[in-house]
Length: 321
Image 1 (spheres, rainbow, N blue to C red):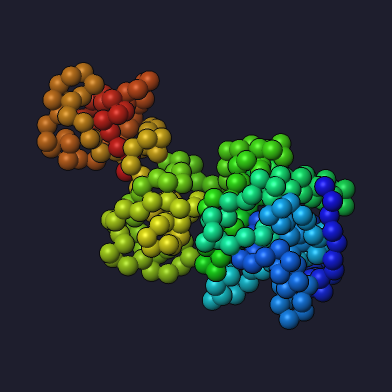
Image 2 (cartoon, rainbow, N blue to C red):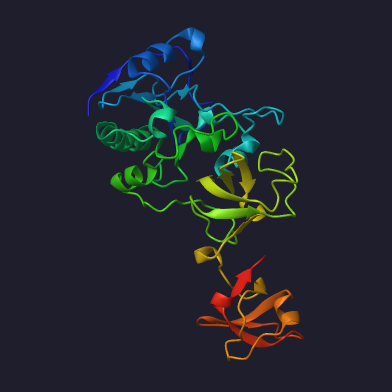
């Protein structure tokens, strides 16, 4: 891979003591040459480490030893780019400007054209570029950037309010990560384990008990109890279509499928009409909330301690908390 080099004045000299361990992907919303020119213009007050053209050309604007001005987050809670609004746990936990520990790649394109989907030449160049970045970062800093969705991310995950469509929902993250030797399965370390395995495209309902969006604003009453599709997923939140807002996964209820994960201690509602033993379930039992006390294969025992103490098929119960 051939990399053309230009020097952007828009950068930090060094990384304020941080070492890069995250690669952030962007879309330029402009042409390749236009992006390179603008990101080298002092008036833009912006830059990226690399820009990848649709035809596969690559230009480096900022040395990896320095921080580019592309993923800036603020330490002020009132800011729209406050680090605490990120959907990435690592960004929230570090409580500083994300530019210090990230490597930025801009990709030529417009979101409205194809929702961030790269051309084949662009995707191939990005795969080689990420391999190159990982090798260089290991040489320079002694840091291994993991090839997973917790470390190869989109700008929308760093700044969900200001950049909800960067690089776009059709950006080929999984293909790229798999090609550089990582797992094609999204990885979100330290994410809650009781979020019912939501996926992009799932239909979910915002719980009546929800009070605030993941970004801190109050949730209007008409949103609660309504159904939406998941457009994007973060470590502990989801971007919902229709309202185009981030909601905590703990404030969402899914419908069926792998999201109805039943375990001992789960609070459940009964959706079927018969116990696993074949008897009809009375109305007062169906209307109640029960706790799972035992699991055996595809059956669950409900309410062993003073409850109904009955076995039901897992397919006939729904987790509510």
